[in-house]
Length: 550
Image 1 (cartoon, rainbow, N blue to C red):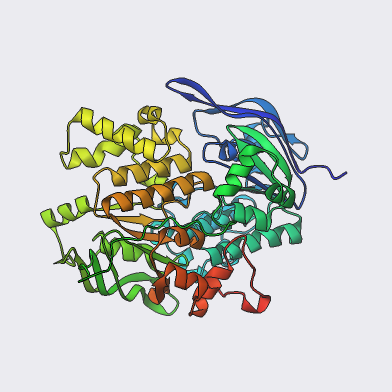
Image 2: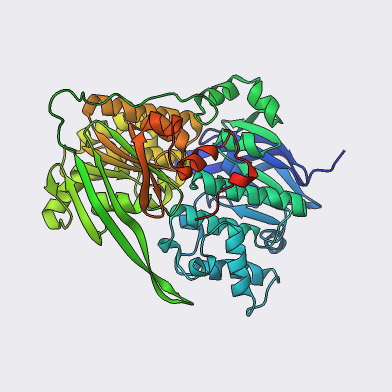
């Protein structure tokens, strides 16, 4: 019998909070064999990310390992002295954290951060590290790696930052990669490129992967074994096919029933306002919008990136327009133009009939009240100093809506609607999981009952069961209030559930538009067909049809 590369026995982890210790992992047993991909799945808060971080003792400051062993080769990582542990981390165990915004150094260029790993572990000299870092970034799937190496994290899209993190993790060709939601911020085609790269490592070097994911489609495609966690415990484990096709535990069956990527579409989009008679004017009208950015000077001189290129669309009240496309296609930049969080280089933007292309001052403030944003990244969008109650009621305080008591009542109501207990009000963002933080961000965006909500990857950090609840919630709110959504997502299975209209973006341009039904059943553009073929758990294209990186 093959000796496990990683052997976890009786792992118990808790967090110290103001209300006392909170158990997060309760007696977990888990093995990973050399060259094996093991997926750990479960709801947000189930303990899967805590398990991943306990392996390398990178828990939050208030977290502690209470019991158990984590054996990696001849080492018990729970008792290994810090100096020896640092030699194991990075060189033998690579970690891909869930959130790139807090894991990448904001004042260092991307290339420097990858080169640092190579130098620390003696894999490159100060002279050779920069060029080798560019090669690693290319292998991790970043387009134009020489340019990206000279950029800072804030200059990259969320998906590009995630790929930079993956480059840092794989730079030293470690024996084990602990990947905590490594593709949650990636579009489906780039997701496939990254997962193919991780899979190639297992084949080339015998590297094992412990893959923490809420995406059961990814687990089905990539893992040999699945470990299902709930409330800090392992409730089911076994070969992937056996667990997903014949689940034994009721919790596993509930997860599978909620998985959009593994089941037929579960439409939640409401029909919207009737079209009889004279159609109402659109709430949002974007006409030939353009946004350009200057890139760092490269070998060929200074360059300009046209992130949004002649984009036009409309959104009506009570309707959802989804923007889909790969990371870096211009989706989030387009959303920022609609909200007037950045100035367009060209074009015109109307909101409820008023030209807001150059809006400033009080008019811009009133637009903020009527148009809210759910950010892609809940870690960066929640003030760590605020309690959750203060986070949710902040928009109400800013616009002087209600008094303290009525604001708290509203906050409790919103928490209930996004499936969080009222006790969450007194906690801080750092005490919540990534999925729980995203639910808080959605609750905050809904506080003012806006006319438009721009949802920038709003459910990418959520497990499948809560994702289904949030999508149902958004649909219910739309039916009740006629709120409009601009829904940005790389997850086409989610888009099929929520959108009335879909616009497909590539390299800053809209290449195809249509109803959700038309796009999924009769896609016209080859790029749209590529995106559909890359949905995890769906049919895989032939080798000849493999997409190239943009």
